Each structure stands twice: as structure tokens, then as C-alpha cells.
Image 1 (spheres, rainbow, N blue to C red):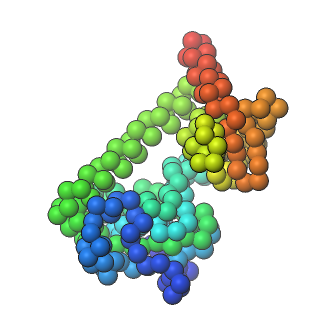
Image 2 (tube, one colour):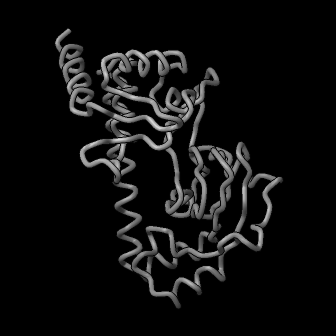
Image 3 (spheres, helix red, strand yellow):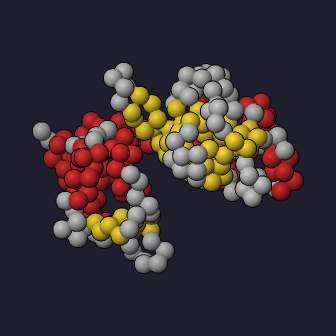
Length: 244
């Protein structure tokens, strides 16, 4: 169920779906019509937006902030399935197949969302081919990423899984051509949950590349000073592991 502490957005918060990538194809009048059918909510850091197994069907669109989709092993270990950032959506699986929620979603920071009824979302998919195709692209990306993570769990050691995750997180630095940066670097426990290891292993794996000049930490950002070398480390150790 939705978290009881959820609050309506403040008057200064934007109530617009224009920043949602899925709706880039929609003209303003259509977007306004959709906005009128949504509820807008704010969640504080740590609040639960969705509970795994719940029977709610709404689709959530992140207007500001970020949330983590997580599940738990039988032993209670948290496993992060993905990070949902501003401009993205989540909850579409339950809206489409009418099955219980497959993950718990928790706000990683103060987060604003628009919540769309499932019937509105399904009607949109059936009447707007471009939106439906956008959902298909997102679901295809989830399948691909899941395959990659399964492969990495089977073929890479913990440190190399951490490096692979950093490579996925890194984006080109607009200020310095050729330089890649993870901005901001997530907390160690979040990276650990994404890579199936411990916070201590993540910290150790990152720290051991500082002296070599491959990585450089500056404030909350992590710079990949030698991205190609990091790629080589992952690939060479993957090959080595596969030959054992």
C-alpha cells in the first residue's frame, strides 16, 4: 500500500509531466489532460512508495528526486533491482499484467511523483503508439540489464562487479571532453546492494584504484580518470575467471 506519511506536493512544486521522457511525444493539451487525472505526492527520504506484494495498480512518474526498487532474499538480504530517477516511471508491470507488485520502492531522497490510475495508463498505451513503444523500449532495457547482472554474478568476482557498475553509472563530463564521472557517487551500501556484495568490499575495491590514478574522488563525485583501463580490468578478469 502507499505510505501513510505521503503528503501532497507543496504549492511551489511543479505539477507537470513535461519532464517525463515517456511523454516527450505528447502535445501540451494532451499532457494537461493526463495531469488532471493524476495525483501528485511528495515523499521524504526513506519513505516507501510501493510495497512488494501489494495489489495497487497505479503507475508512478518521478518528477524530482530518486527512488530505489529493491527486493529481499529469503535470508532478508536487500537486493537493489534498479534506481529510478527524475524523468522515469515505475509500476507499469502491475498496471499491465494485474499481478502483485514485484518490488518495494523507497525514496532515496526527497522525491516528487505523479501517480496515474492504471486504467488511464492502459488507455494511453492503446491509443498512443509512440507511448506504447516507449514502454516496450523500457521493458526491453530491463530485460537486457537483468541478463547482464545475472552474467556478472556468474562470471565476475565482487570487485569486478563493482567496477562494472561504476562504468554503467558514469556519464561523460560536460566540462572536460573525454572524462567520465559518476555524479554523485551513491552511498557504498547502495552500490553493494546493486552488485551483490558488501559495503566494505565496495569501499575497498574503489579505494585500491586511487593510487593508480584510475579513479579520483572529489567531493561527492567519482571521476574515471582512466576509463579504458577500468574496462580492461573488468574484461581481463572476466576472461581469466571464465578459463578456470
